[in-house]
Image 1 (cartoon, rainbow, N blue to C red):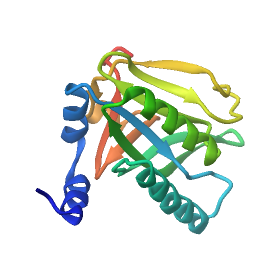
Image 2 (image 1 turned 90 degrees about the vertical axis):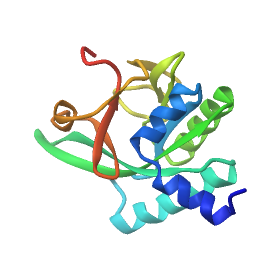
Image 3 (image 1 turned 45 degrees about the vertical axis):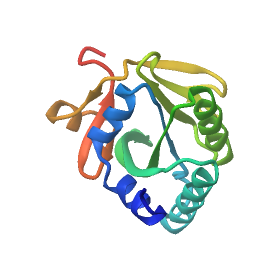
Image 4 (image 1 turned 60 degrees about the horizontal axis):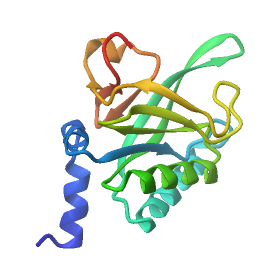
Length: 171
């Protein structure tokens, strides 16, 4: 049996193939961040640590990833990076409920959920102009895409240094 410290080390060593394996075995995946553009780097780091503790208190083993997107900054495109977390669970309903709840608590515009059966969906959790609170936008399948095409995408996540997206090539 693994000790708790070895279990945490195993989770930290997990990469993109680990997320893929969870999906293939029928687990649900959620992605959430605590970062906000109007907060300082120091404040966002504090919020991320708080979010990690919150996710652990709910029984999840969060994996650190980074999110990247292009933001319109007064008509000029600006690349934004944020700390995010991936969590997995056998209990799809509980993961969806929990991930949306913490998204609201940390004032996020949206959170992402993914499952092999339902694909990937954004859930509005804040006051964004592009996705309303309570709205669900289907993003595509649960397929994980990676490589040069994804590297050039305006929206992507990274586990370690490897970029990825959920969905099919034509999405």
